Image (cartoon, rainbow, N blue to C red; front, side):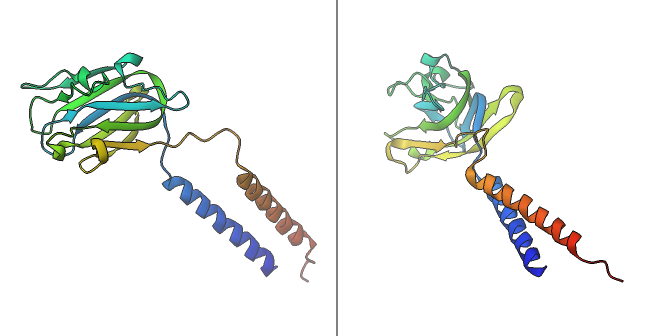
Length: 200
């Protein structure tokens, strides 16, 4: 009987470890509609290009060519927010003030599951500004991703994050094996319990 309990305890521990590992894994970005970018340092927001690649097609759904639009709450001499999504290396978006409070909002060209997001900053000067807070939202302002991208020391002043593909509908073979072993162990425990003679 103690051997069976050890097996059940081992299976329980294995299941707990598998569940904990799944909880700490990166989250897929499914059905994204909007990206918001702000400066992570109290300085001007400057962006040469934003690319949000759609899973499967690898279309840049954050580009004007794919129907995306950009807007910014900006004051002062800032340039057009559309400059961040026009794929031009010569016309960056600059915020109007250096207080770090301004935000660039990009409405994606379509609802998309993203495989990656990259932002290219300045390479000629002011690389200390190439550090951004990024939030990606789904419909109904559901937060899908929030983090920081840092291109201050990156080659080409490009910072990016890759998103995992969403899980498929069919469990993996290891999941099936664990489930079958669990049912088998539970069945064996019940069967063993029934065979024990009643104490007098």
